[in-house]
Length: 337
Ligand code: PHE
Image (cartoon, rainbow, N blue to C red; front, side):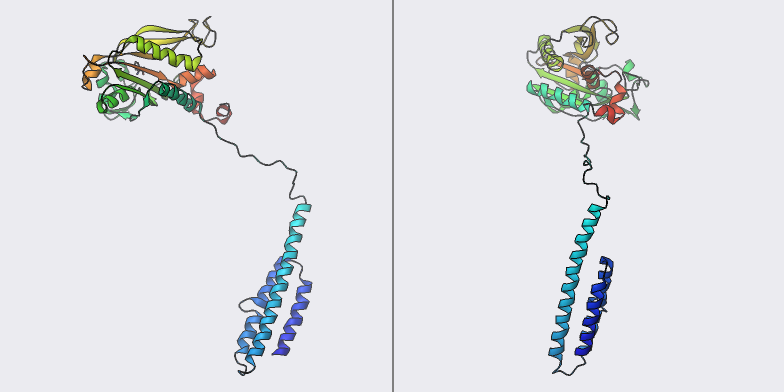
């Protein structure tokens, strides 16, 4: 047994001195220390030795096993170090190359404007409400005093889903809120709206922000004040505004609000169709018929409402001439914001 061990020791010494790669080292390890390696075999053979020889033989085999393991370990480290060095030296690994940067995302311009508008109204005491994008005829039209033969109800303008519609404006949120909350209230409702329309200034989906304030003793003057504060915050304190009489079935009196053209400062250009003014939003005093549909006492409560298109504001603020750019997801466009 001792003789055999001596022979294995000599074999190992010879083999390890010739090893030239990590692969060969692995091979050597399995030959000597593996499950079927010579150390395992000798430990098996040892069992058949007479009992008084076993401890001695066991001691020698274990010493051999230990020294083989240590030598293989040392040699492995030598090879690994050399390997690292060669891959640095051979130009596989150019340490002078600049690192690859992770490209970082940015907030979509529509979301940026939306957040800005929300924070302006937040500071005026308005809180955010949301409503569903699929509405029944009642919420999108009926409760808002929009008559059955109104052109907005036309198939050409509205997307129908069976008896329901994709909301054509955020005004139905007014109804949901008033059904569930008692006055006084001050809310804004940002969200997606849908109309069957598509060209440089219209997309089938776009975003609006609705506003509604209900209180005692509200006047058109309050509406005008709030609209002016908002427009001055968004477009700058110098911005001139004007209120033009208009019509919406759910407000009376109604107005459209213009700002002086941001492109030509009122001189008249292509963007403002030579008028010097840009239409920005629709608003008015809540029509008593709307209060009736939500069981508010129109003798006691007064309200004003307004609605504006977010893309339109973003286009004027950032001077973007095609609304479709917002939804094409072209990084060259989005990266500029
Ligand atoms: N809902 C109207 C639209 O989409 C805007 C509006 C809202 C007008 C509230 C008056 C009051 O055109």
